Amino acid sequence: MGETKKIDIANNLKIVEWLKAELLDSVAALYKSLLKTGNDIKGDALARIIIIAYLLGRRVGVPFEITDMQVKNKLGNSIDKSEELGQWQGDLSDLLQYLEKRKR
Image 1 (cartoon, rainbow, N blue to C red):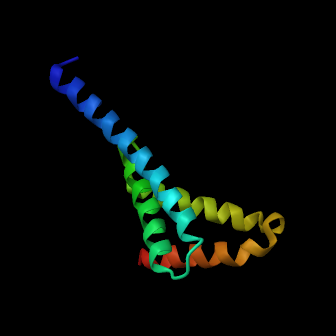
Image 2: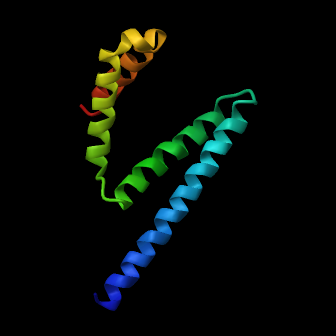
């Protein structure tokens, strides 16, 4: 294995570890924001979590498009099992519709 390849792998591992730490930090920020009023802080924390999830996925070999597709599939499967989820069916359906409209 060439020196450049070793550096790339080491650099990628560092970035993955940094993203994992950022994800934990963002989840903690979301938990803290739930104790406060106002949606700006909550929205910011949620946006950070979503962005980091996409970037982390990409760094471990999952393209953005695959993540999108899997999110939609997961939503569809969860909606199909909505009898078990009861009250969540509407939220899941709304999110799936939103994601499908957004791609058009």
